Image 1 (cartoon, rainbow, N blue to C red):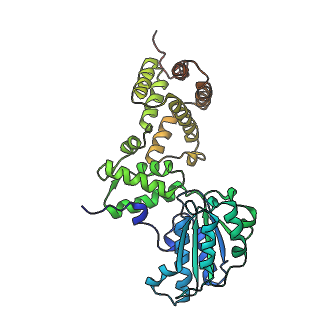
Image 2: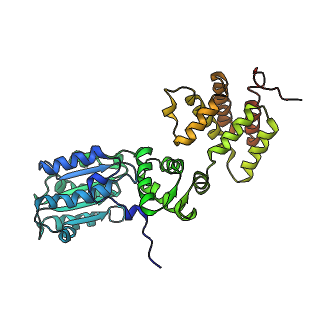
Length: 361
């Protein structure tokens, strides 16, 4: 059986122009290399899975590539990686400092990549200060961290700092779409959007979810299957309950909620999600605020259609009801009843509207 390579490794960028969502970083680094204005100590900060280590490796290769004296095979000899999470003692740093003194056998620069640098001990940081302040001409240090606030100020002041940002949903979705097409995987755009949304700006997390979902769905990624794998309520559930509430069908609303609970979903998460759904319906009523709805285009169209069945005040009341239930849930001795009362209130909002048939007693 052929070994499976996860997408995060298989499609790891090898050039700056293929790095997703960090053009403000990659453009700056490219210009710095071209104009020979690259600092000898750089600090890459940002959330997990956004490309810090990837950019560090590309930069390390590009530095000697510009010099032209190192072949493709020779790059590896000039790049040293240290995981500070497991090599965080003062002895580890002193060993690194001893290596720094020696010039590279080939090429112009030695590049040292220290990942999770915030994990270094105080003694290790202090031992590193002098070398970081006055490194040999042939040494370049690239430090990477997810927790910039844990790095001592004396280290920060000696580094050129690059802040990586969370990758926007659309960029992650486009990257997933590109991989799906290369791998021959069928997909629904809204499913890829959901994956990107749940990754919370981390491309590596999105690729991990994508791989898992691709296997589960046998290379046919749908929105329903994505919701199932991610163990979240899909939009159909909320759309259905809101339609039932609009028609004042209290028993049907309660039965629908009961089915959701029987599937193992947390009622607290449900009512919070329902409040967010009504918020999205409010945004969908106005063309200028539709872009504030973070869902796929097909789902967004369904939100717009459903929003036309409610007036603005009803939606405001619905959001307040859900928010009130969300706040009271944890302190309630009967939290399920708290949610059910909220659902009955929601299903009664339109009971007196002229275009809605009153619920028979």
